[in-house]
Image (cartoon, rainbow, N blue to C red):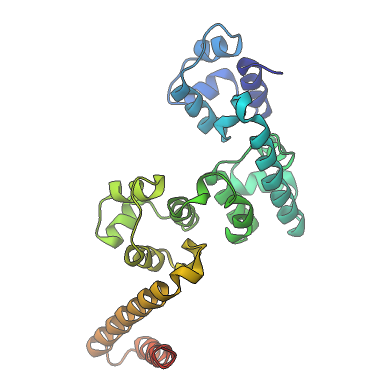
Amino acid sequence: MKNFGEKLKGLREERNLSQKELGDKMGGITQQTIAQYEKKETVPKFETVSKIANALEINPNIFYSDFSQSTADDSEEIGERIKELRKSKGVSQKELAQKAGLSIGSIQGYEQGRYNPKLEAIVKMADALEVELDNFYDVLLQHGENVSIGGKIKAMRLQKGVSQAALAKCLGVSAAMIYQYEVGKKKPKVETLSKIAGALGVDLKVFYDDLPQKTMELKRYENIALVNEFENACFRLVNFPDSEEITEKYEKLRKKLIDRLSCM
């Protein structure tokens, strides 16, 4: 079984990174320090291992033998999905790497199940392949960061290219609050999730796996969101009565609201 240093060297070389380049990606770690890790002269702290994993765009669990089997199983599932989607689009590994801004070694490693892609890498590959992130959900929801509502918020935000600060501004909260939602320190209420969904332009249902229990709440807050949107359209129509675009949107929302209320 490979030790930490051997794993680190192998993963670094697969990405065609020099020791100096890896150190730079970690925020200024010296080439000498990376060399010491690889030669087993120095043992990195847990926090440093996380930085190394981030720089290499892998799951840090790959460095720990206790997690090796579960990591391998997870990686194989995700790797198969990446390969399946890539081939269905007629895209080579090299082309996917270029479009996603990843190394070809990373793409090969993901598909062969040698390591797990980080959420950010999955978002990049989904965008490069022009597929919805939902294509990965049935695999990702079984493990990893996407298992939580916070992970889903982060995934959707990244795919839409929205920063934590921008999303926070839309919601009228601090960027720190968005961070706490994403890392699971705080759980947003359904009403807050409704606002997040609206700001990101996604269906509120994407945040829930227990739909039977949430149906009434979802209906309630979806209708609130629709009413708010209709009220905004009314305001715009009053102020811009000659705008065909605003008039058309108002009519569509009015009909949608009538249809929604008739089903309640």
